[in-house]
Length: 623
Image 1 (cartoon, rainbow, N blue to C red):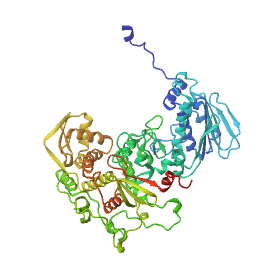
Image 2 (image 1 turned 90 degrees about the horizontal axis):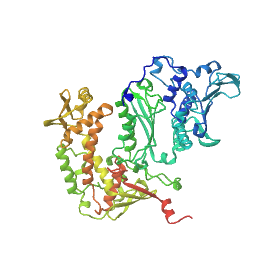
Image 3 (image 1 turned 180 degrees about the horizontal axis):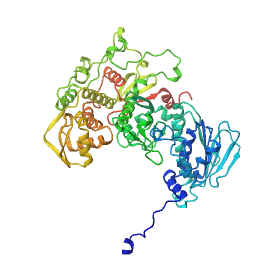
Image 4 (image 1 turned 120 degrees about the vertical axis):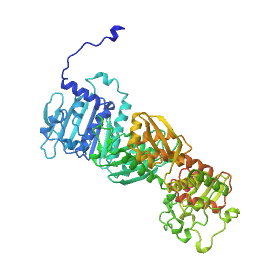
């Protein structure tokens, strides 16, 4: 036992040999063959390549070859390319602080060469011939090649057998290599990519538009199941596509984010994108998205991770808010507004009138909804009583549908009364969700539109409508702080105390007053009036934790929305309530004009489209 605790023999401090230094660097940069593929494709894109071809043997363990048609490397620069920290991409600290290329450290080729057999073949643009450099011998000789560069990496980790034992099967390593190229391909649709394995073409993506590249790489289902994201806020711009809630997956394997064209895994971006789905996804379902963040290179530090997979933003809260608002804005438009387009077979006909999607006062006379769908008088009164308890008497002049009494026709339960010819409503094709034709078992509304049959879950749909209106009422009123009769104190970490002192103004804007009570204790003296019945300590801790990294307002908003969702669920129309045609049509019109009306507050879909083609298939028509 004493021998085990005895200190090791003292060794003198000495400088490590260059080869060992390079192998240590390779341990940070080169984790597996996919790491080599990523670094070499980075260099190819920096060289201006328009076509990149990756060839692999044994999943990249025996061979990784990356060919490009970029500008090439001059003969005199080839030996320098394999030296540690030799690069043409930066030359000063100012260049490092505003990196605009994929690579910049100048250590990848040297690190890879130290754990493999590497050869570099390149022909500089305008040169008479290409030149081949063998890393092991340093021999440089002329060779035949068109303008561009080919890097061959054979027998990866042959000089470090222990590292090779940690590699997985060839199929697993191949999958990682393909994923590495896929990330580049999604970021650069203007560049063609091809992947060969054991002489067989595995993947090939030709240059094209961004949407075409998304469809080629992720499939047509991703394109059809996503919406366009395009949002600008000051120096930031967020573009790409965000998947609709129905396209969510059980795994987070289709979540792609790039910063200035560089694929990254960043907690700020992931949290921001996930928070945009809080009102739409529940449980463990994971959203899908492909988002590109454009920001001034001087406002992001890419030199914080050995493999450059992580970044650090100068203002992470600014980035978080921009990404969240970008995805929220893209998802807020109801897809019901695009549901009623004419079928493909009937596209040559006269265009249908544009459906009403906003204020009824601005709609043409023939598109004026004749009824407003509202909860029953007792349900409306209950919701309003809950609002008054939480926030005082709200102003409802702008939202009469929430509290106004039912129209006489609805209250008396009379049948649908056809409108006069002067304001006759259009055919079903004019409305995205069509016109109601029946109610099924007191639960579903059946409607007819240009595509075929629409099935609506009336409780789920009305729940979302009521929920969005409650949020609108709440957003119109600023968060008011309610002082606590007895301050709630709790033991805080030094980081929490510093956060509370540094962000006192932000906390006040959220309706929170959190002040130091002692060097290691914080006191909650006021909370938002809407959350007065909750746990003030738990709320304060959550807000401080979020404020330290992200946008703390999401915590208060999330807690508030949970209350509103409960109220909306109880205030929405119940199953087995018989509706008139007028009521059903009014519900459909409000769905078309309500944000996020495609999902209820619990993440379930509110409607489904059954096309004529699908109906024909059920009855074998046309076969």
